[in-house]
Image (cartoon, rainbow, N blue to C red):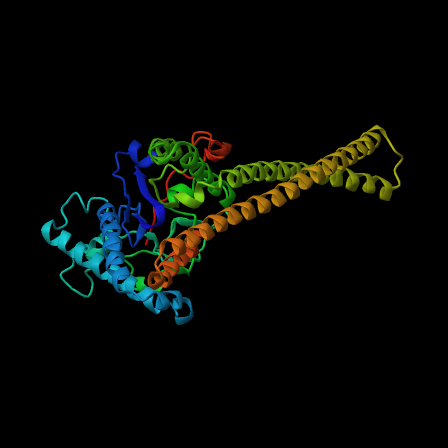
Length: 445
């Protein structure tokens, strides 16, 4: 296992798919050895025009893992790290290998099991022609297997992510900051997504490369992120997962994810849901205080935003009353009981707005204090790691003979370089607010 990284994945059939007896069209997987850790998810297209999308997703996951294992054996780390400056020439070759292996497996599957009447039952005439035509220029059986793909890979010298289609890759860096490093594709909107089965699929891959190991990475299908109204709520879910891994261990963490996914799809998107993750146990294990403060910051931001919304609503009401009073004044009419009520409303609303704005200032002060605390905690963790690593280097020097000192010190320095890197059911109270979101996210490639 590379540097104590934990790899894991889980997939659950969507609640709406269960209701109509539809198969799960997501797939996920992971792989870990001494040289590489991989996590990957694939999301099949929900439309009936893709009758073997569930098979395509499984094939995509297997193809990606196989190709990456071969890739890291021969890839030059310097070339990979320079890839962003070279239009991702190296990772594009990897993507081409994955596409080639996927197409080969799809063709083999079709040859062993050609389309039957059941496969084509709900397929439109346009797509049926693609699947049954005798004209090789028209026939495109791979469309029936279309899916998206998200993958993240960690080695000792570099890490990278790649993606085609929708879904989200969320990275937690060694300071505990959550981000989505793989660029978003504007062609993925609503129920439309790019796909591994597209004719120009190689041009639709997006990449991210880093010389640092992440503290954690989550790859999630769109059934996950569609269950949340914004990225902060999605990140709160992943933070809850990390806290469970820290406080209760890996096996409990994995079990909690598996048990929670059915609840998530039922209360959220209704779609199939997949999560694949990589976690650096050493770094994450020191970050519980970071995540606790982030949770407090999340709650404070929710409180501040709620109060700001109150101010906006009251200000709009106040402006309505003021506008009506101006009309009275402009018309030259004498004040009546209605106008007096409006004046009182304007005054009362003004007082309430002022009161809430003071409360907002207090919340924002708490936010600034928590942010400063967060910076201090991260610095403390970094200093602790440096002290441990420096001690390891000194120990290596003392244990080595003179002729061995250089190689052993170099090895320990490499170790140093690589090292400086509430419960799900509660899920920070973000999931229940998402009931009523779209029930499914069927996709047209």
